[in-house]
Image (tube, rainbow, N blue to C red; front, side, top):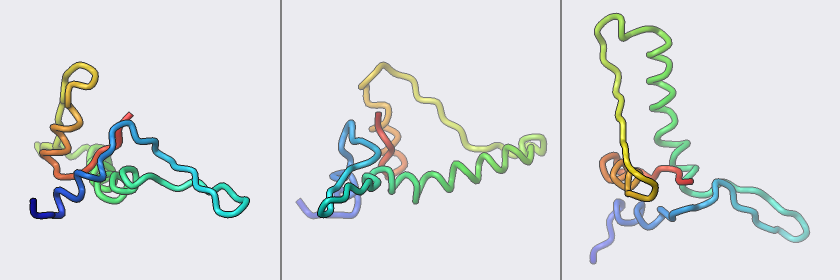
Length: 94
């Protein structure tokens, strides 16, 4: 199978990954962000922040519709997987 950026990003998705990993360097413990959290912070968070700023400006009063989505389903039914597939990004789990 040929490797693509999309298959590489899907391999980074690990279910139930912790948001912070602990690494030891010598006698010091250092906390680092897990890759999935970094991906979320770099790619998705700015989008949500922009939408929130627009909501705070009451742009909906001007008949400008802001994006919204609702996903309903039981626990572990694949809701995050569907959103990840549609958006092409990794979402935080847990």
